[in-house]
Image (cartoon, rainbow, N blue to C red; front, top):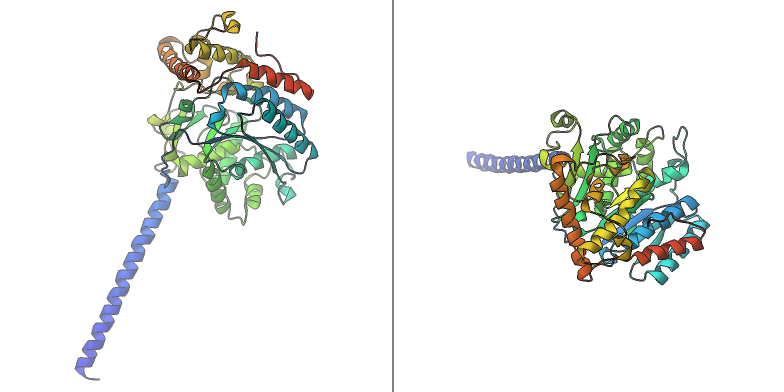
Length: 439
């Protein structure tokens, strides 16, 4: 081979090697970027940044067993009765998910549909049915601390995205009732969904169990307790993403296997805390976080990965919007606030109603609604608005009722107690007597 040909061959080899090195360097940059992005997600910065309009349809969603009289009573006396008073139908449809294999569930579904269509046609209601898991071991297993029906409620909570096409779900618990008018300001802060959390319950045995199960499911720490706050407003695809993450993390072929691995039955599980802990780590910028921590924040943050710490802007000692619902069985005395809220709303609209004139309500009668954790309010006690906080609380509640009153005056909202009475009569038709809210 001549010296010229050797030089030409050497040049070609150098060019090939050079191109290969450039390619490998480029791939290395891509891989490095991928690692950075993945680490960033774990640190809590999401690739989702939607601009959510406040007129986006919201599905008010409830999962319940329709065959149980206790749950039927909860639906009529708690959710249905308070929904027709405080949840405007313009916000979106209501979806009830019942057990597919149960004939009484189908019977109850027909009753609810007929009652709603006949007496509340402005409310769009869908009744859907969920089939049992393919693997019965998901619900029934040795050493379970809960019966299969309760385990099914937990299981179902990870699949709420399958029952609506709306982008936002208002997840309502089966023992919760609305306590004051729901407003868009109580759902959104700008374009973000409000999230409430309570970090003051780690001394409770069951919250410690929630933390263990959350860590097992996500591979990331339990952030705070989100169990007290319903309805919980969550983007529909957050459920999808959370389920996919858990399945990958558990190295499972499907969610049934993943569920059995992270919830073997010996521990307790809070699905809403799992889903919102996931949102904190992976979709934090989609939500507006309002949490209260009862320990040193620096110490509390040591449990989290770098970049996932809770910061002062995420904390709120007194709520900037009143809680709009409560767990009835944990604080039945709070039911008095339903009439108080009704009367304050009409007062703000300039209406004088006979039932309200018999009482002397003021904004201070609603201070409990600014407490972070209504579920822990067993008795009437000093509220968070005492002392120097009173003026702030009066401003928050005043703004809330001004918003509601303006909507009433502009015919954007009905607030009619006759709907409450109608639901009470419908409940009687199926053998249910609701405790009165009027006094």
